[in-house]
Each structure stands twice: as C-alpha cells, then as structure tokens.
Length: 109
Image 1 (spheres, rainbow, N blue to C red):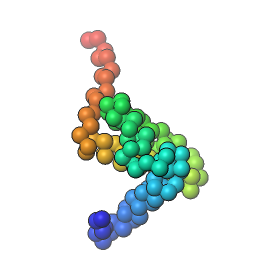
Image 2: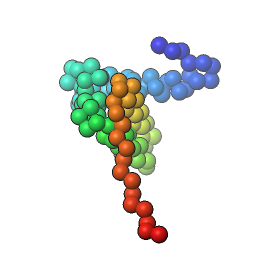
Image 3: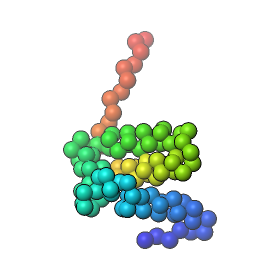
C-alpha cells in the first residue's frame, strides 16, 4: 500500500473510508454475497454490458443524491460514489472495452 505524502493524509483518509464502506458496510451487506469485489455485481454488470455506463451512472446518481442531505448522510453517498468509480477503473484496467456513448444529433445548419 502506498503511504500518503505530507499534505495528502486527508485524501488517504477519505479513500480508506470508501474501502471500509465497500468491504464492511452497505455495499458488502447488500451486494457482496460473499464474493470478492472483482466478482460482485458492480464489476460483473460492466462486463455484461460492455462498458462503464452502469457504474459511472450510479456514481453520478449517488453524487446528486448527496446534495441537500445532512453531512453524515451526504458523506456516505459520496463514499459510495467513489467505490462505483473505483469499480469503473478496475473494469478498464482488466482490459474492459469502453463503449462510446451515442452523440446527440447535430442541429441542421
């Protein structure tokens, strides 16, 4: 594990709390099914759909839901968003292909 450089300890704390949430919090309770992270639905769904749309969408949803919540609840949602984004990184690093989202039609000109 990498130890944070001076001044990066607060970031390391947030990332550590996201890990704790994934391995012992709501994520593992609802979705873990005793499986390693790489075999949980958050990763498998990307393999089945062929891209990170699911996980990036879930991260966005959690980030938006955090707005307006009391700070403790907002933090939980944002830590969950970090875990969804980490799952997207893992999918891409295992060689997953990213699907380019469709472009909006250009206005006729």
